[in-house]
Image (cartoon, rainbow, N blue to C red):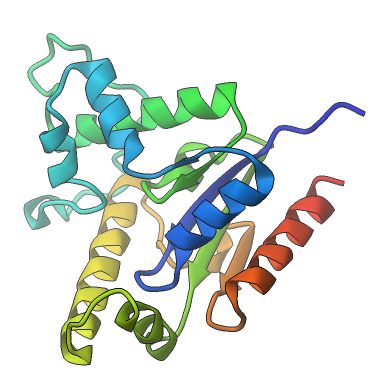
Length: 206
């Protein structure tokens, strides 16, 4: 039997361990994971400074919040006046995501990849979340900031991700209806989480 294509997209709340899960899944499944590498690749392919991509990475300027669903699926040409606009920088990243997804099995973290690839039947979209306390427990292990600082950072990053997703897709970031599989990462340890995700993939692809 021919092996089925597999592309996984992971949207994640800050502190939920979504990136760690992506890396562990990458090791378990033997497929690469793409996170900030997308920024470098988009920069290399477009000639636009990587720093510009970094400035809008999963966040947008509040002045542009009135427009929703801006993703069109087609980047502007290099000679266009809006080539380095925030909207087109997203389109350039999306182009990289689409190209990678068409050529290899892989995992994408964030950057609206679930929406960009929503029409591909080999894509499994996931949303990983956890309670504030469970997120705090994970974050305390990685830095020495106070809980107040961590909670404020958590709220700001999740707000940025939600606004970014809404702006480019027109949809609500943490709405379970946008994803194939949502999982509370605070409910079990990483080993069990990986087993649960692998079981879902196996069942869905059977």
